[in-house]
Amino acid sequence: MVAEAALDVLTQGGNAVDAAVTGAMVQGVIDPLMCGPGGYGVMTIHEAASRRTTVLDFFGLAPRKTVEGASGAKLVSEFSRDYGYIVEGGENEVGYRSIATPGTIAGLALALEQFGSTPWATALGPAHAVARDGYQVTQAQHEQWNDTDDPDKPGNRTRLAFSDSGRTLYFDGTGGVRAVGETIRNSELASTIERLMRAGADDFYTGELAAAIVADLQAGGSDIDAEDLRAFRPNRTAPLAGSYRGRRILVPGFPGGGLSIIQALQVLELLQHGAPPVWIAGAGVLPVAAALGAALEDKYTYLAGPRDTEIPLEFLLSAEHTEEMARSVQAGDLLGASVADAGFDRETASTTHIAVIDDHGNAAAVTHTLASGSGVITAGLGFMFNNFMHGFDPRPGRWNSLRPGATRPASMSPGLVLDSTGELLTVFGASGSTRIVSSLVQVLAHMADRGWDALRAVSAPRMNVQRGGSVQLEGRFPAAAVRRIGASGREAERYPRNYDPYFGKVHILTRAAADQPWDGAADPRADGGVALLVEQFPPTEQFSPVAPRPNSEMAS
Figure 1 (cartoon, rainbow, N blue to C red):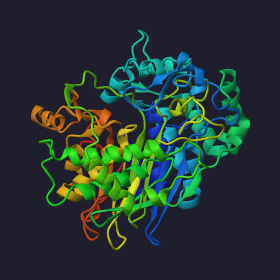
Figure 2 (cartoon, rainbow, N blue to C red; figure 1 turned 180 degrees about the vertical axis):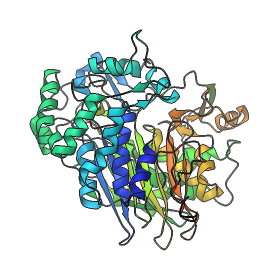
Figure 3 (cartoon, rainbow, N blue to C red; figure 1 turned 90 degrees about the vertical axis):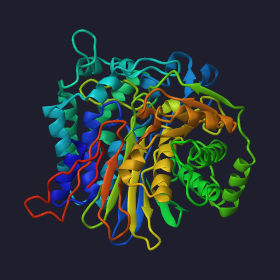
Figure 4 (spheres, rainbow, N blue to C red; figure 1 turned 60 degrees about the vertical axis):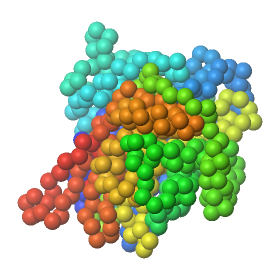
């Protein structure tokens, strides 16, 4: 549905940004636990004529009234499996105090204003229609919505049931979530989108919608006030640039996860020479695990929470530091060996991605999210707010301490690959929390090192590295591979599911060379779709969607 909505924009003469904004708004309707007006995100835009690439980040911000360290005594622990902090009562995870100032509407509006050609109301039209007319619950959604609590954080049933609107929209009369194939019509969200179409995006931050948001959030105990909304502005920056195997990688910088992607790829290039080892046998996993682990250590060492804290980018991306990282991992600073099968395979649904290329060669990639979702749906508005606050350290003076007006590091990394002449080759992105970085590094390396096409690279068995060096593996890795990784000195865990959404969901558009046709793929680990505009067909067929892939958020 998202891919088709974006493709319609392209066939009607819109550009990549028009299509991306339209698709992102539709995503906010049909993926209500993953994204929407109450969320935040980042967009990377490539202009073909000038070859200029721009990053717009619209990450959430802590309320201005936040007092650093005020909730430090409430800290229970850090998450055991993901990134976040558990505090007494769970107020930073579900409910009003888990919400950061949302940026999605401001970010999408700015993208359309500065880079688009379609009017704002037109771009929101498809999302309005879907909210009004409804969409069917998919199997993947049904599984996600039935997700139950775990030791780190509440599951999706808890979030969906937090508000009256959520219970009405997403549950049947018996207390179960709505069945696969059932149609969900969200008239309140349709009214909100219609209001945005008439009054413009500013209404969300300074108008009637803003007043309704502030009234409810403050009544529920949030520190967000009218000034937080009024003062919110997206940031426009240049991307971070790195290289891998002679190709240029462009990704968002802080607070996105692009630095870790570049670092891991550049370290991997030093660690892995010649023909890459066989991936499924486990030998290919070890250098990737080492490179990802080195990048993860730098993230925890250098990436500070507030935007005004200096991050030594030139040093972190330098050849000297990359070589030092490679020497460090070659020295074998690893955990003691152990091998286990993990007893869990779930991950709270969060984050979506869309990638678009138009017929002029312009590209847009958007990753946006609610984090895990606060559960808060203001009566009459129809959308859930984010729970971005769960990723701030409640203790003062830490690398990621909760501070007034601060943002925090995240993993979202919509990016591009260019060839040595500056021609665009790949548009990529992923969802999946901290696994965004590890999944993208693997897919990009598979294509560059192994020559795999997009579908094979995206579908290949996947791994992840935790801080400290332990390796998590999808169920398709054979036992011999798990033992081999464990024998290297790393703890190795194999998850039960063969295609596990925990390991990230990658969406990608790519071509082998500048004179080759575009291809698209999306992760079989989740919902999505590919739509390709095939120009070589006769005119009566050239606008037919082509979907030979298992999934993708948008390929055009």
